[in-house]
Picture 1 (tube, rainbow, N blue to C red):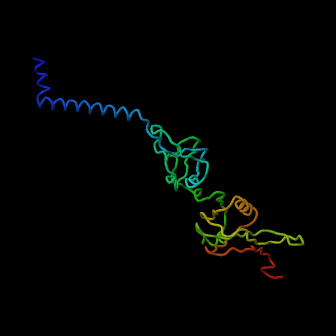
Picture 2 (cartoon, rainbow, N blue to C red):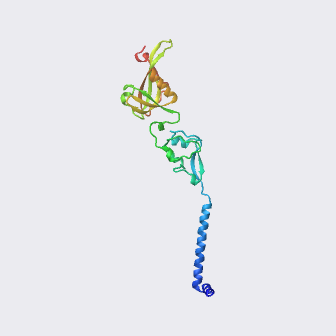
Picture 3 (cartoon, rainbow, N blue to C red):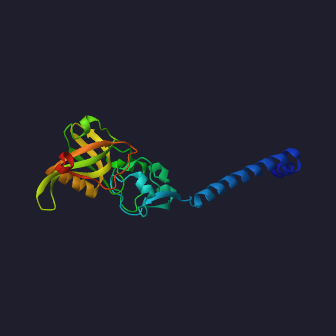
Length: 233
């Protein structure tokens, strides 16, 4: 009886169709299993992320980091080892600063950078922010604001050719930028040397600011004003 059923299964049209369906199902299952095995066996491609090449100090701006050399490299990292928020393009760093020190060989992540606060992000390489305390007259009667350009004068004591001490007013710096104004405290953008000179002048002499136009020219021979220049003789 069983042989008769098997014979009909192979000879009838319905039987042939059924066998074809069964074979197709078996083939599909085998193909799916093979593809799953293949996908699992093939390594996932690495993801290119920014990795610190040397210590990145806290407070370093993303713009400086993006253009500096030697601070980072673009390295391929296995996908399952890429940290959440890993940075893949330096454009992500624009307008941000490092909120923590980043050690060498560490992946750079978005959590390590944030929008800047304070004046530090406004300073370029070699620039300093220095504060001097001034009275109203010395700071142009309160007319200077952040962004103003000023000349810095200092009144002090100098010696003439005979070695006699005399009071003088000297044009110390030209076209310095005001970064902030708070009461009598004025913050100027300076170089490290200029900052030291301003601190010295503030402690030992008297500083005066003169407001200047944005497009004002620079005086090539800064004047030194003595009593003779004011009253003659």
